[in-house]
View (cartoon, rainbow, N blue to C red):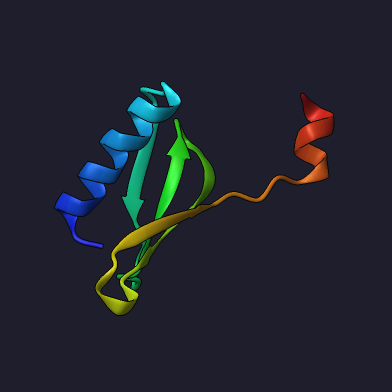
Length: 71
């Protein structure tokens, strides 16, 4: 993803989830996705989908049983 696209997605997610510490970062050697963090903690991946000239993004977040038990 391009830097301006990442900035727009980051601003959208910060506002939507009311999380000022949320950050979207480019992934090394990947141009179809970006990583999502809250502070220093990795929480998921944003995937870019540009099929059929209909641009969209999907956010994938895995939650481990360990994470739930910890809270």
